[in-house]
Length: 197
Image (cartoon, rainbow, N blue to C red; front, side, top):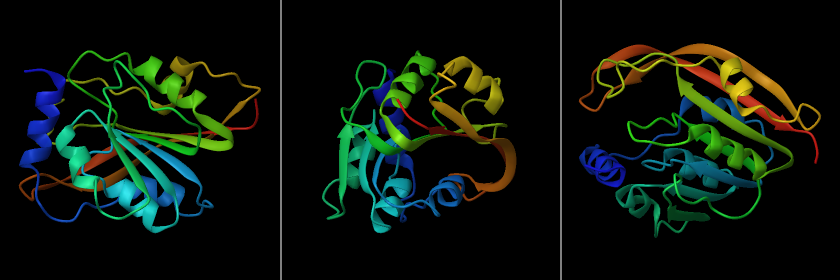
């Protein structure tokens, strides 16, 4: 099984209910003035739909054609694209780039992708990275090691004259699994602000 087949299968098996915004994105982006946004690994589209409903012009990308199809044709200001970020990256610059739970069991140079994402942030914009800090019981990545937000920032090694760390912390939330089960999980939250070029 390759990465596309894995993620297509996951999204095809998910509930047909309406997608929901991620709690972390809502708390971070809620106070921001709408502009252009790039949603990396958009999945079911909850974040993209939430942003669009608040006036953002959203480009949403995912390796899964099933995920992208669920967003296409909704009449929202969303451009949904199937993109394998291991091979390609969408063009343009954005006020907000989000990479939430950007993990995969397949080979991916995550640091390279996130550096490319940083280059796509406009001056005055933000790069939001939310990672798993713990594994839910139903997760495929039970044995993963989860770097801290400051470790992620260090890996990216962005120019400190252009970037600020606006938030770097861990927070708990109650998560619901694909069969309705619940568990308390930890999120690692990193918000980087671009101050200029």
